[in-house]
Image 1 (cartoon, rainbow, N blue to C red):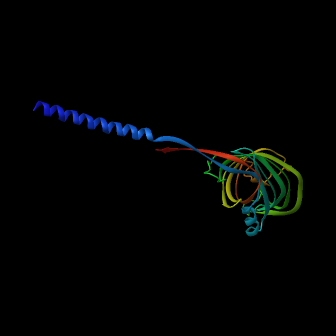
Image 2 (cartoon, rainbow, N blue to C red):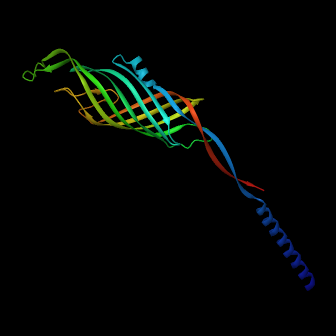
Length: 251
C-alpha cells in the first residue's frame, strides 16, 4: 500500500513538472518585437480665406470685408502663420453714424497639439499673433441733446461727414482653433480669438468705435474678441519621414 502511494506521488509530481515546463516554454516562445513604420509628412504653404467675412459681407449691408490667411510648417508641431485683410464697417445707433475702413496684418505662430495617426495632417492648435492696422474714421452724423431742456428731450442733428485718416492700432491675440483635412490637401477650419489692445491713435475728442482686424471696441475697453471659419489648400513643397515604432508579440 505504501509502495502504491509513492508511485502515485511520483506520477503526480512528474505531471506537475511537465505542465510547468510547457508553460515556461510557451512563454519563452512569445517574444516582443518592434515593427518600424515610415510615413511621409507634408511640409508646404497652406493658403486660404475666411469664409465668415465673405458671408457677412453678403448678408450685412453695413459691413464689407475680406481676409486671406496662410501658414507654413516649420517643424512637426510649429507653423509660421499670418492673416491679411481689409474691412469697412458702418456703426449706427440712436446718437451717431460712423464708418471705419482700413487694412490690417497679423503674424505669429501656431502650435499643433493634436497627435495625428499615420499620415494624417489635422490640427488642434493654439496660436499667438501680433496685429497692426491702419484705418480711417468718418463721422457721418451725430445728435446733440439739449441738457437745458430735458423735459422736451430736444436734440440737434449734425451732418458732419468729417474724416479722420492716418489712424493706427497695435494689438496681441491668442487663437484657439482646429483644422481638418476634408479632401486631399483641402482643409476646413474654425477658430476663436481673444485680443488685447496695446496702443492706438484716435481722433481728437472721439474714440475708435471699430478697428479693422481687432473688431468692435466697447467703452474704451482694451479687449476684443473674434471668430473665423476658413477654407484652405495645402501646396506641398517637400516631405519628411515620420517614424512610428510599434511593439508586437510573436511566438
